[in-house]
Image 1 (cartoon, rainbow, N blue to C red):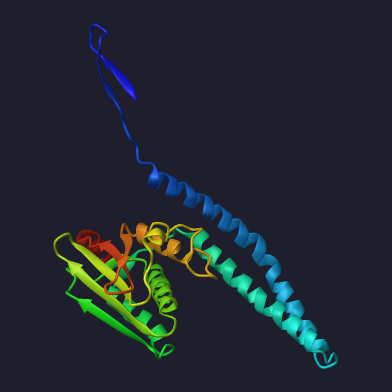
Image 2: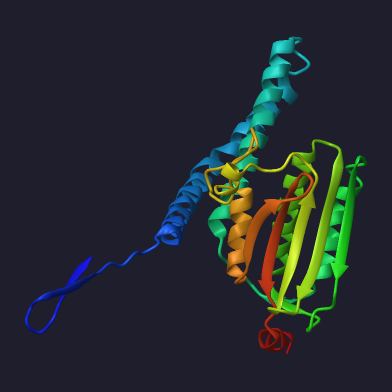
Amino acid sequence: LAALQDDSRRPIGVVMVFDDLTELEKAQRMAAWREVARRIAHEVKNPLTPISLSAQRLKRKYGRQIDDAVFEECTRMIIDHVDLIRNLVNAFSDFARFPSMNPQPCDLAPIIEETVALYKEGHENIRFSPQIEGDLPIPLLPLDRQQIKQAMINLVDNAITALRGRGKVELRMRYRQTDGKVQIMVIDNGPGISDEDKSRLFEPDFSTKKSGMGLGLTIVNTIVAEHDGAIRVTDNHPRGACFTITLPVDREAGQQVAN
């Protein structure tokens, strides 16, 4: 807030400037979470292997001698929960490593098809529908294939979880000539996402899953942002949710990478 005066030092008005710090605060929180994730992954991962190996060794050596259900249950519980903790640590490691994009000439359509193939056989009561609409102006885009595929897997996995074993998942890709961007949509007909949850979905400490760690969509958001894209979630009518990734189609960059 600043007061303005003329040459005679008479007040002539006030200038008020508003700064939206939302994105800055998000970036600061993201940086803090990455540091926390890095430290957790480093400190927790080291003791997991000896704990698991010790439990397995006890089971092999004394399993036949100790005919007790408690011994069997406890060793199995140690091994199973070490695996759960390892999955948590791996998720933190993946989050802490970003960003590290390595763009290469990449075709988006096979990534969508490969993602569907990963889940199609294992979910008989869920119908997967990949749809490719329109041709891109350049055949290959400068993308990090592994990261884009990970983003697609995270989104499809969330859609499957929301369906609880039965429903439909659509994966659509289309090119918008109006603004020169390509859209990738992951759509489900599950219960949907509340407006309150939509505003926090991509924050590191938020999850709608009871067993969620709140990192999956944060990683997706990071991947998309590193590709100069954007992601948003909307309602799918009459029910369900729609996650839309929008990526720029840079013809010159694509041709340079291809060369």
